[in-house]
Amino acid sequence: MFLELIGTFVAGVAGAGFVMLINHVLKGRLPRWFAPVAAGLAMLATTISNEYGWFDRTKETLPGGLVIAHTVESRAIYRPWTYLFPFVERFVAVDMATVQSHPEQPGMKLAQTYFFGRWAPLSKLPVLTDCAGSRRAALADGITFEADGVVSGAQWVNSSRSDPIISTICGAG
Image (tube, rainbow, N blue to C red; front, side, top):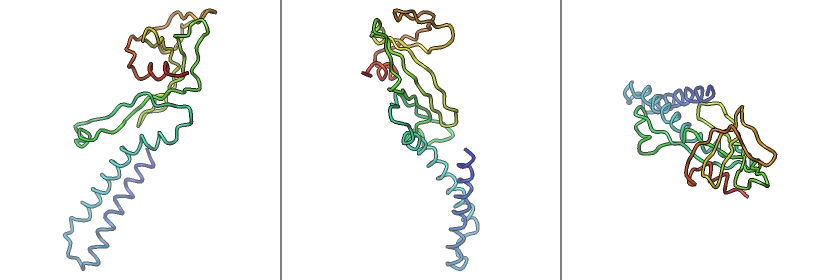
């Protein structure tokens, strides 16, 4: 975040400097207000570029085996262009290398999920899915696994087969 702020200020200085250079070449023919306006536009363009580029930059750095299951796009009234062109503000990735199932409970799969956010720290959460029942549960304290693979103490979230997390985990192997 700090580096993006510095980059935004540098873009503003560069935008104003470019206009001042052009004004020098034109021997002062541009209006005086043009340099601060160019600085502001350069800063705005840099900020917008950083917001729209975050998802692609983050996606490129993901290790192999992580599959993006769901993205959340952002729209805001103070950024009116996002109503026409929303950008990805957060997403969920499933580590397909961690997908496990019990031999006696083949319809139940366990996987590690990662929650990425634009200005949020990375969160890691194991998720248990019941593929046949179209439901999922976050594994937390109080959940126990029996020897035959039966799970007790889970707080299930009912969903549909089209739930992106369920379909990603259940579609594995």
